Length: 108
Image (tube, helix red, strand yellow):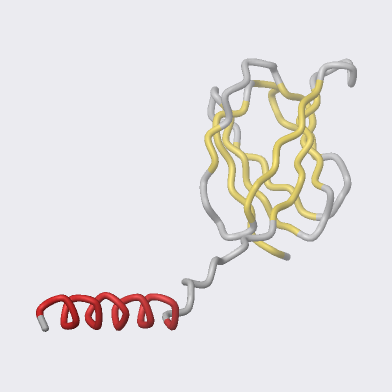
């Protein structure tokens, strides 16, 4: 009887475990941002989530231009106090050129 009760309990728990739906995962869309040095040959691209999350940037390249792939409004902060807002796909001048330390984006 004891074995039957334990077996029934295990079977019941297994049935409940299979019936519980998996938690939904949230996919946050991203935008590609290109950071360009003065000579255009020195550049890097990073992906930023479109939910306003601040992303730390760890690159010492002095940036002259920032360009978005589009569909976002982004703000970037430089190591010497610059604040650069990028909307649309046209390159935006960083003044004065400096490494960028963080940024965030939202869907346009």
